[in-house]
Image (cartoon, rainbow, N blue to C red; front, side):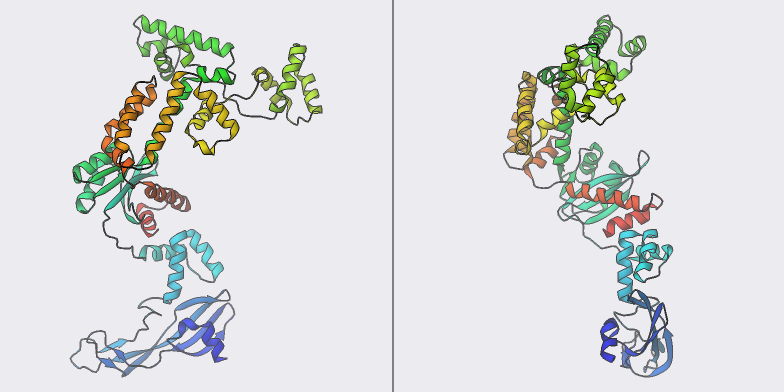
Length: 507
């Protein structure tokens, strides 16, 4: 029996277990200290003289899903040194029960492990299922009482911001870009906040950041000799945005091969372009054009930037639907009998297996989608073909990509620009020269959105050059921000900044 008890309560091996009582939902373990001499906490003199006895009732880890209470009989000792400032003191059991705690050390570690992941309310709901009774306020006190790890200022720093309340309050997270360890979380964002932290934490040599001008200025002000590294993902993302705009601007070129249909929308686009350019040629301003034609200012700007009406024309944005498999049948029937109604066509395609509604078929016919040989390729998907690794494309996607790139000289130049820039994202020492060649070649093509991207690179050329030559990046900082969004959702947005900061730094 003694062996079974010692096996079940092996964590209490530092005590003398006298009895185990089954009290229903609670298991009570009666134990006492072993009676060895203990040193005085003031002078360090060992003593075995007992002044009195006291009882503590800390909770221990559950057994069989039931709470465990330890009725621990402890001694108050008397110091043998007459001149000692501590005449009496309570003995302690290091590693088992700490001073002023109502939980054993190992139970406290379990509670801290749960509240570290779930915080207050969720932890208070889960812990009773494990046999540990903790309220939400106690869970928060345990969480905030967990000491934060002390980390030295790293050589390579990662900086990024996240929203506490989108559009209103923001915070900045600082991590070790090499290991991903959280260093600090700052209230607010901007040059002053980051520069102030950098001045009080010297030792940083490399700073990884996104394209924020505020962070660039903060690093220049606080650490003029530090190397700034632009994040390669953000650089590539900016190029993707420029490519998507270029592909949309050349819809009239590449969509002709994939089925760009002429119709009322194309006529409206042509008329609107002629009206806007006629007013602009007459000296009318953009705002006055917007008022006269009853169009939004952004619409007027988009038409004004287009040198030809084809640059404004877009392919229809249709998603695949249940009628698509019967497109050939509908087109053949309308060619044989133009006056055939939607009800008759519905009966015919239902016999072929169509399970959709009558309204879907009517909308499909009114949009003229049955006249297309195949579904339209949207500008977004066309841009995706350009931006996807060639080895990840299917055979059909490669055929579509070849059709896109051969549509016009601008699309051919755009595809070449994307491929050559993607090769720069694997850091190498000779990439700065290749980047200069890429910028020169890009300016020779009629790609205004890519030109804007290239100008942005030139404005931050040192950081971009470091990005394509060094292996440092800001990916781990983005990962911390992704986990921070989970923490915010767990706390329903009602927790303060201090608690959120504590959880981020404990991650």
